[in-house]
Amino acid sequence: MTSFPLRVDTVVLDVDGTLVDSNYHHTMAWWQSFHEQGRSVPAWRIHRAIGMGGDRLVAAVADEQTEHEVGDDVRAGWERHYDERLDDILPLPGARELLAALDTRGFRVALASSGIPRHTAHAQEVLRAGGRVDTTTTSEDASESKPHPELLEVALDRVDATHAVLVGDSVWDVRSGCRAGLPVVALLCGGFGRAELEDEGAMTVLEDLTELRTKLDDLVEWNSTPRGVPGAAPAG
Image 1 (cartoon, rainbow, N blue to C red):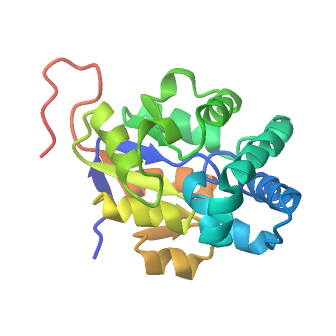
Image 2 (image 1 turned 180 degrees about the vertical axis):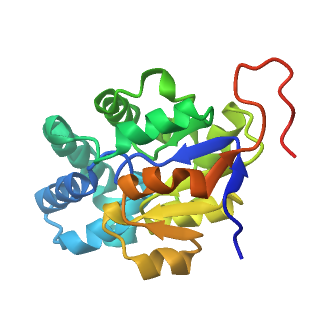
């Protein structure tokens, strides 16, 4: 039984589908790319895989033969089609407010994305993250993508986290968080269902970032002296 509020020094945030409204843009970019390669993959199946690394997605939604024959071409096409949609990528309601609230409370904030660096940088720009983010990981920072926990582990190591919580929107986020030993707050704004997120191990499932912001102090509290204070005690 999880006891709230959790005492943490670090909040790790997924990006796509959690902070920016991009899951369906990714879905259609992949869909277009598959069809350009003569591979008929339904959009619903692609959406179910959004959140895992692109290195895994082709085989996951099609098959290993498709990955072997046209995997790199499909990924190149997805990147091109997503680039065409970048101007349409906006923060989800409450995203900027959540980052501000975490910053005010002194939490270290890590963005852990499986996205390519250019796409993640664009997300940070529209979020106006600025100095409110302590570190960001992308597909280039780990040899294994989500749901493997390596991206999370890299982010946690960079900020010297002692106790952390992950916020994400997909089953892949929940799996990676659980494998990294993190409690996971899951959100419904990415299009995954409450029951499936709970079944994967999410400690709680909330509607969206606005609900998370409203309940933030009930869910997490700073476990030590805030950043920048001399003599900060280590987490207990």
